[in-house]
Picture 1 (tube, rainbow, N blue to C red):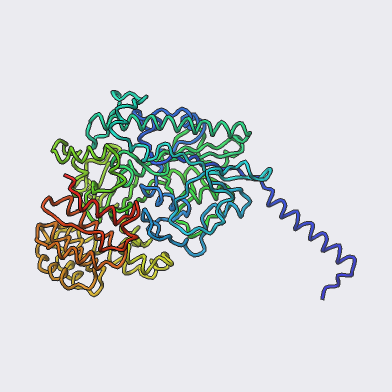
Picture 2: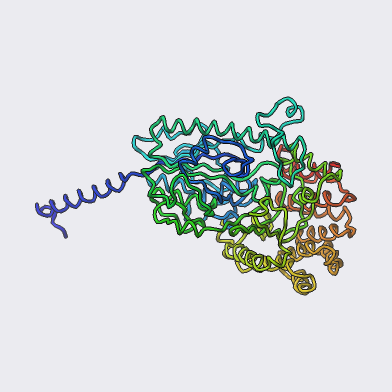
Length: 627
């Protein structure tokens, strides 16, 4: 037993206490940089003069760039708000952690042991503020922000306390382009319409030139807002203590960008200003540009590294600034991964890998068309006009691509073809790069594993309580589903027996993917028509039945409207219903003779009565003549 009455012992404990206290004080008083994110919504880098000569001039962003680093290859992993922001806040690939659907039907829990990154900053002494958009697909702990509202400000911190602040600017958001023809006539643009060059996949019409010119005006407007905010930072005497990031929250927002995994939906502007005081945190000189690839999964670990906080191992991203990052590290970064799933009521399943100048797109349901109706997208005049011009036969071959089924694989040389309109996948000269990127993507979706190889409704029923654990427990099965999906990459003759095996499987999701492969082969898979008829009649899984009906109807085989309606009525959830209606909407889009009427009365009222309900939107499209 220690004798605390001994004067020498008391002195030793006093000195030890003083030493420990000073150590803690020294640790907590270590100076840390302030960090600010300036975030614009829905704008790819293609709209900024900083990146494209035909883009909008943004003097304040350009001034920041002259003093900072311009990232030529910064990427959102997803081309839509909630999925992109969920990727950022977690540092995780959304399809691995169950946050890949926009709009979510249920919130996902964060992976076990992982917090949203601002909580780690708070624990390290930072004052964390967000003004004001969150839009996460995760359940929050409530400990992420000191303030998160339209009034949130770093100014409310304690004296000397470092801060992390996000300032969102909605001026360039998609909704700003939902103007009417009358408004287009009345409101002239500051940007000259005559000098606007439309993208090659768009029709060169007054509507498109006006829309792009108006969008340039919005960029100049948001630049002024950003300039005012940066001035305030300077007025507060913070410029030399603050690292500033500017980036777009994903691409957009003219047709074929937001909601699509082309570069226009993923390749975002990003500028980082690091003051002289903190220049040791950057491997790149200020006033320069870098071709290093950085992704949204990297933002969380980067900010934590800058703040001197170790990134949790559950994060998928890697820091690109901060302690320990060298120019060699940065120069080696040349790859990005992208994903698209459900956007409101519109389903698809597309994954991408870009490595250097080559971009690989894997359309897992190639019979889908990009132009498949989406209520929010088609509020834009440009979308409506594009569709009408297609119906009238007034588009060239490149402009028609948006309305036609796609290839299962796309390969693009982004340097020569920045708008991804020349698919090189069948060019033998590119066989080696195609096989390399295909293999890289196959490894990516299997290793995560990618939860989207199960239908959303099944995932919500079985996996939403712990998506990461669910994925790991089913990793082998997901890999088998990926392998079935990839049968469509070979000739039908090579894989006919494998397809047959999948259609006869006891596993409903192998049958499900076997039918998707049949639809991908089109008329080449006519061998399985009789099998599909029997599956419509007898399969125990409702979603297998709709895939069988879809396969037959896409190939001009008669399927009664009664069969479709019975499948719809048998749906057990809103998510299952929405997926079924997506197939019916596709058939309505591609097959002029396809007729069906679906009454709202067969559904629970809470699915079809509220404005914005996904099932309601699909039914209204299916029941309306859009010709």
